[in-house]
Image: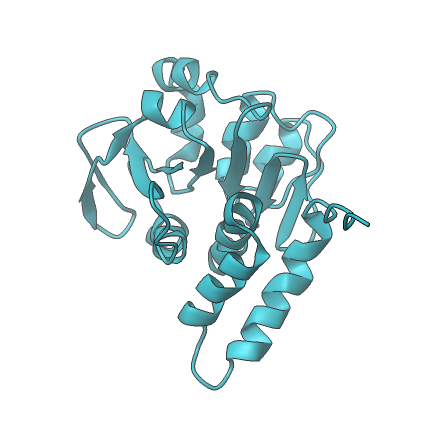
Length: 207
């Protein structure tokens, strides 16, 4: 199971790396989480340089993808070489999530047609200009596409992906692990309050 986090030059550390940390709480055989970049190295908005773990092409074949955000997302969506690769993303066969300005990437790829999105306040007008309704909430998902708004909503995306791929118990365990001591139940409850409405209904029990 491969989960790729698209991470571009000028990326936001909170968006890519919190999701990476939460997703890596899963220790199942074959579970792999990578930072997917368009170049061998990318440097964050605050000067943190990280190395490529997977390519954008590999991300397009992953089981789940998170499109991270950063200060150069508008440049990313104008880069035809990058966007041509990302047109290989397909919600019919993979989970696709976007964090903050990552929603602009999904909008420009035409993946948010008739699907409202969550994003950060800076990106909001650009997503609206791309023809997408922006919700005043931290998380929203429909079928295999999810978006989150606000850096500290990144764990909602991670929880959604884990729940979809490994089940609710695995997602709850991952959230509980990273939650602040003394606030774990409250933290997990709030996360579920935001994520659960957008998870598929459980299959009815066999009689």
